[in-house]
Amino acid sequence: ISADTVISCACKYFNISREDLVGKKKSREIVEPRQICIYVITELLALPLATIGNIFGGRDHTTVMHARDKVAASLSTNIKNKVAVQDIKDMVLKK
Image (tube, rainbow, N blue to C red; front, side, top):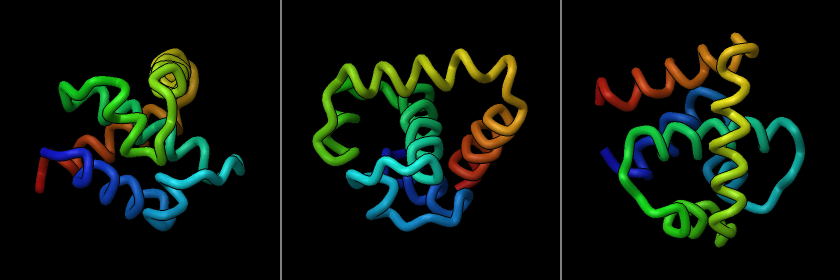
């Protein structure tokens, strides 16, 4: 499993382009999938936060921590996020 695989699955799941997911756009339609993707990568891969930040357009490791923590906190209350995380994990692990 690589970060590339997770990003590809997230792009497919949310029907957005790879450029949007790893790029600089900050619209809600892009930010939520990006944060979920970052969360799944931190869950599945033992990558340093700085490395994950670089994958996502040179973001800072604190941005990665924020995304990870925000999604983790939302999983207990936001069913949509919980389903998205589980579906993307399933897509990645079946490849």
